[in-house]
Length: 409
Ligand code: ADP
Ligand code: MG
Image (cartoon, rainbow, N blue to C red; front, side):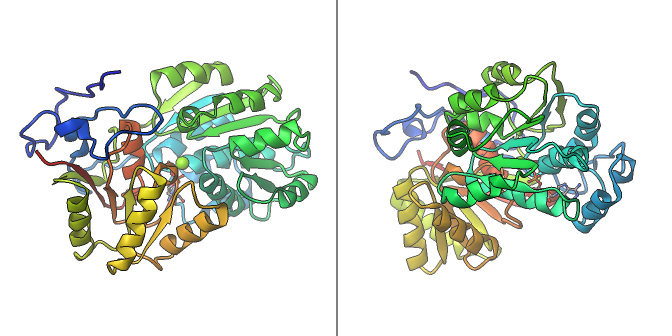
């Protein structure tokens, strides 16, 4: 399959630093790829973008304040306790549709509050309802499922609502115990959910709400058969919600298998976050990239840096190398077990280390506060992966920077 050219001739805001068309060798530097789909060709100009300065940006004026939403007193108090003052654009526009009982496709840039956009109205709906379990939330990665669960707990505090986190890679006994308590919300990843449904530990027949978070990612991670299996056990009469930062046409077609007559709420502005200043760095080869990365990390302001690499081994090696070179670093990738992944993420979140080197497993949805820089040590497979990677910085209106290494001519 030839490389797809992507966005050539598309006007660029600040691509003037480019003097050439394609990077040498189509942007590959590591020899033959072992497996998986062939890498998409992404024109380097797509990795360049000046961030919109805060002054220049017209702030979104929500049509609602949280008090307009028909939530109970506890939920309003929990929203205040979280420090939320005004609804974000996606919350402003999706919450009324969800309250009205519609199926919703919610599209909004990364870091703009999609989690609360679906959690708040369904938490309100479930309060005082005895039927359990009632809500199924499916997310592509364990970390993301856990993060949704944490946000759920904060919003549902004191409301008598319970959740179970059903993810792979951890011992199942505790999950089975949690399920026996008949939680209202089941939050999990596709593989383990399917497993427990097939072993008859998890009943889908009372589920009234389905949420697919980062669903396009789940579908391109190959979870479609699992998701179909899970959804086939759910009642047809249900509310289904799909949230993502990106949606491709083939996924949009698939979505209609899971949603009934959905309303699309799209508040995406640009393809990438406006708050992330993006640039490329040319390097001759891998050794040169490592050298340049070391120089960057030695500079002021590189305080919390997320580095993306392509392979599990490459990521681990790079992280070890950086630690040895005086830049405390952890790695997160699929060769680590769940508790190792969690420990690494926590060390990075808590700023015990300066650098986290990750495969794309960490790219989607994770909300890590104050990431100063995202560095694409290896270019992403697809532009959509790029958008998600750099969405880990510049969150909640903060300013972030992204650098992408490309081959030097
Ligand atoms: P997304 O899923 O769109 O990538 P998240 O739901 O992870 O974004 O939210 C990003 C961050 O913004 C989180 O830390 C969240 O608590 C915070 N946040 C969400 N909505 C609001 C709001 N209305 N006001 C203030 N902070 C918010
Ligand atoms: Mg999200």
